[in-house]
Image (cartoon, rainbow, N blue to C red):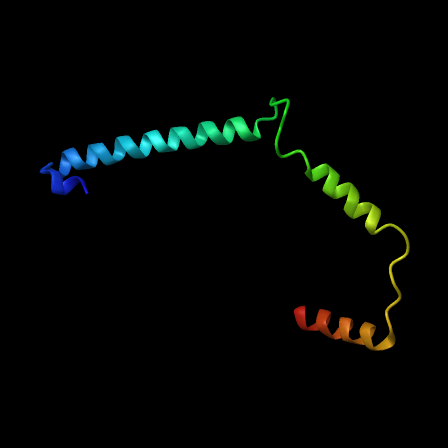
Length: 81
């Protein structure tokens, strides 16, 4: 706690703001480096694979709904609207 070290309010505030600015700059730098479009070896490029897998999984005709399932779906949709 900065107040326990005998600092005035203004000195403590300046210290805290400086530390906060430093942390913000480090965070922005981290985010920029991690998610930059220019980064060649991006860590977050698995979304395309996930999307393709999802597409392959859901290819083809959807399963048929029973009368009860269809009725329940229509009731649920009516309640939402």
